[in-house]
Length: 129
Image (tube, rainbow, N blue to C red; front, side, top):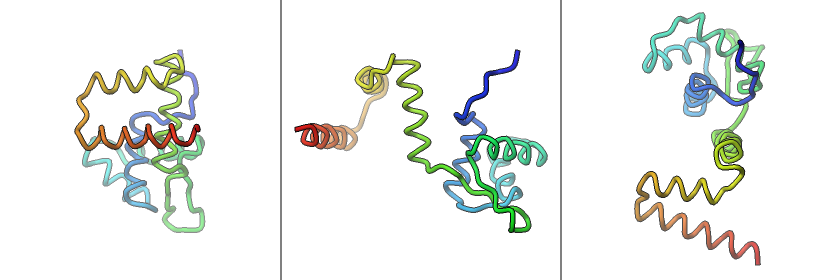
C-alpha cells in the first residue's frame, strides 16, 4: 500500500531544504555534495528527490540557468510553522498549551530560553488586551 501524498517534507527533503536554506541557490551537484556528508546516496537519487520536491512546491528551479539552479520555495520559518501546526493538530489535539508543556517537561530549557519564553508570553498577553 502506498503512503498517502503529503505536502509536508520527508526527513530527506528536510535535509535538502536545510542545505538550500544555508546555501541559497545551488546546483544539483552542490546539493548532492552536501548530502554526501550525511548520507551515501547516488547522484540520480538526488535528482529524483529534487524532482519530487519541485512537484510538492518545496523547491524552485531556475530553468534559464545551465546547469539548473535550485532554491527553497519556502522559508525555514514558514516550514517550521507549517510542520508545527500539523504536529499540534495530530499529536496534541490542537492544544498549543499541551505541546509547550510536553516540550518543557521533556527537555530542560536554559535560563536564556526561559527568559525568551517569558518575554513572548508577555508580548502575547499585551497584544490581547
